[in-house]
Amino acid sequence: MKKTILSCLLALSMAQIASAQETAASGSVKDDNGTPLRYVFILDAQSKSAALTDSLGNFNIKASTDSKLQFALPGYKDVAMPVNKSGAGLQVVLKETNPGAVKATDSVGANLTNRIEKTDVTSLRMGGQIAPGHQKGNLVGSQYFFDTFAHGFIVEPSGNIVYSSDNLLNFDKIRGGLLLAKDPKNIELVDWDRVKGFTLYSPAGVRFDFEKDTTINPTHFLQVIATGPKYKIYKLIKTRFVRSDYVNNGAAPHGHDYDEFVDDADYFVVDVQANKHMELSLKKKSLKADFAKEGDKIEKYLKDNSGRIDDAYLSKLGDYMNQ
Image (tube, rainbow, N blue to C red; front, side, top):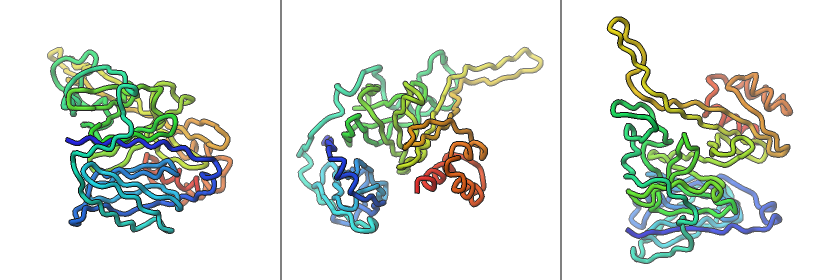
């Protein structure tokens, strides 16, 4: 199988970045027979953003209006397309090329990783985890973000975006780190100091972003719930392993007859301009306190948006407060 690795050094002056306006670019990618192409890597070097297409070949990416998006997929010729004024409705066609051609400019190689284990990737599927203290028997939940490894890309501290179509990723919720599978029998923990953040795509094509903020936690990556020029909302996933506590004394058996991974989470709001970090509980009172400097705005949002405060609610709130 051909291995294609993209690595783009994103070095632009602050003046260039400041003058560029961003838009939400979207569209689809197909081959010259009209077949949608999945996992096409899309890069806008100017706005330092990237994305992958879903199973229908569709994509969404934040892009600078005066830049060109780069599209790449193993076995196909790369394409660069200007972002139109609206950023919507981009139709991209990739043509097949010599599948043996390799255009590798960088690698997620050994310089990025510290090997921690060698095991088959299938052992990371639901029910197959290797947990400290777990014996044979039922095991509920997972210490991993996805049941199987997923496509995605890595952002280095320099802003360099590293992607390989052959390398699959996952998030270890207990260690708090990024796992990389270079092949079915080689799983590595990516070196914490060499990663600024990473993005995972679920099998259904849903995007999940993770970033490092050592003020909140010095060892765990944080899931990005919302981000923008004024505020960021983070989720610190906390997973613990709980041993079976089942007791059967013949009269009143009680407890769980299985080991399990139990998920919990803490939430945080970061005032980007003031560099202020605030804890967030999933209550309206906490939201009012964290966004107090824009009291009228948060009051309006809470009035107009009822319902359970969860990740989806916070994502919409973050987008609203960043406007």
